[in-house]
Image (cartoon, rainbow, N blue to C red; front, side, top):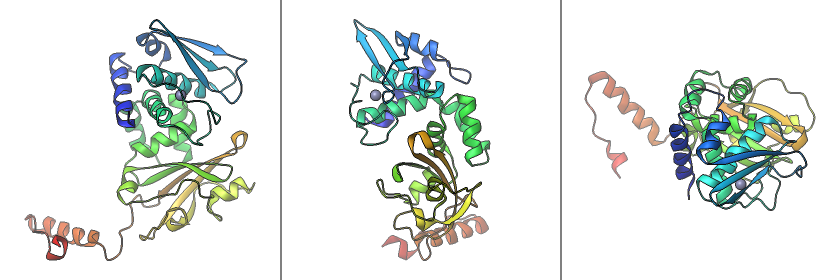
Length: 287
Ligand SMILES: [Zn+2]
């Protein structure tokens, strides 16, 4: 199973149940999969939930001590295990940790995000939002989702070159790059220390940083040759020692690599606009 298949299955369920408003209601989705939901107030704080299945009936149990947003995500994640027929691999690290998550768990997270933040409602709101932590707060409230889930989904949905980075104990655990940044081959290595001098490092060290701050793109991006200045805005989740970082280019465009093919493409596109004739590729580009 890959993440795309998981996302498609989730979209099928959203269509079948005819989800037509936000926040997405849990009950009709549970009913569609024949699930019952129980809240356990005595669950270990490191556990988010689990499901029990017998003779085609399913009971999803979530941790009553978690925030309502987290409980919603867990419910949809467990529905993923049922709908995708993927066994749980929850043993090991705490549910909220990004340490060593297995492929099955990542697929169920993708499934949950697709239901919690359905593309057809989420995408138009992302497109009209002014990028920043305030936008994530606003969207997370609308969809009753955690800021972490909303930020990940925001980066994978937006047209703006942006990255959402989750770090834990000062180490980068998880990055979602927007399409524009993936195409520009922006990369943040998993497991590196949060770059010193970044707002993320400063805030984690207890310093006060207000609003987005400028930072050279190559401070965050590995082997980055395009230059440019990013805006960085950070939130610290003290209870989990997690930092959420939103990075984006201030003019919302990825800088061109100097001396690269991109410049030639631009020249050709300029010609195309002038005379309306699509030019042949230059000799250098055909090598
Ligand atoms: Zn799971």
